[in-house]
Length: 388
Ligand code: GLA
Image 1: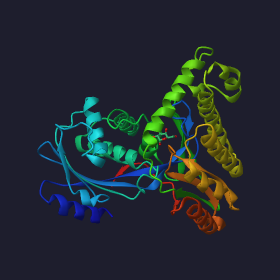
Image 2: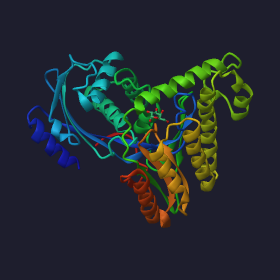
Image 3: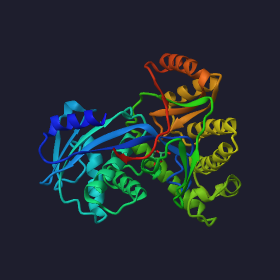
Image 4: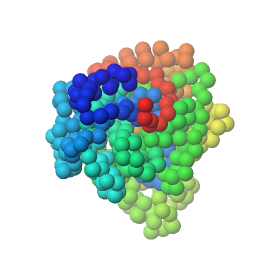
């Protein structure tokens, strides 16, 4: 892979101009803890072995020349350090450019342009964080190129900052954190209120993680995402009038039931209920995993989906069909939507012997109900971002 990418880089950008280096940043899947990361709750994501490869070389001038093997028809997209503003024409380059902008905002002097070639094997728009992967990748490249003092965790925060302030999605820290801090074979139990985290080994004896991709692009999802976030913020402000909390993650189920009357709107009660209960489910799920009770973990995954469907309303017919059909397959330990929702993927824990039936049965029902195919990936938990 590395050699092929370097050759392609030479073909596109020429051999002159010094040595180019190769980098990798994974995609991620969240096992449980959805829409909790901007509510001061816990998340439990892991990095994948699929992700984004980047080849980069510092330029002598201030030009930015970027090429993606995933969008070859767009050719080399050119801009410069003088043009660090989001634009429609910039297309996918808004992600790496956003991170360069964020470094400058944080006082890290990016003085030169770069030639950048990307190749991603995360299915596009799948909700496995292809954009966060590009953001963290760019952070790794810049740190390596300039020797900036920034920890992997700092690079995650810078990636999130770029997504929030340059690309306009008010996301939490989960995706960039999982991608920058991933560890092979483990998921990350992160408390987004304190940023304390712990690696939890996922030893799935006799079972695998299967991602089912709905092939429904997120589209409107980004604006809905910001809407959910502000609904939670309003609910929090209402609750703060009657109870001393900093985030929805500070409440357990019982406290929520006691104070929920302060929320003035029935829809907002459901949104906040999801945030509170999902956080508690995540804590319970990690405890179940530690106790080797994978069945309990699976039940919590299922309950997570129900709450995302009924209370948070971020699923839709595509994700619901994938999950509800998965639940019917014998040998499925748990199944739920993963990521922001409104399209994208589901994650299922499936016993080895049931994987084939799962793909056949869920695939067929999905085509019958939705009218086009879903894609299935049996995935492995990979490490974080690296210089190759
Ligand atoms: C997206 C965001 C994350 C998180 C999830 C939902 O992936 O980028 O920060 O909020 O949605 O859990």
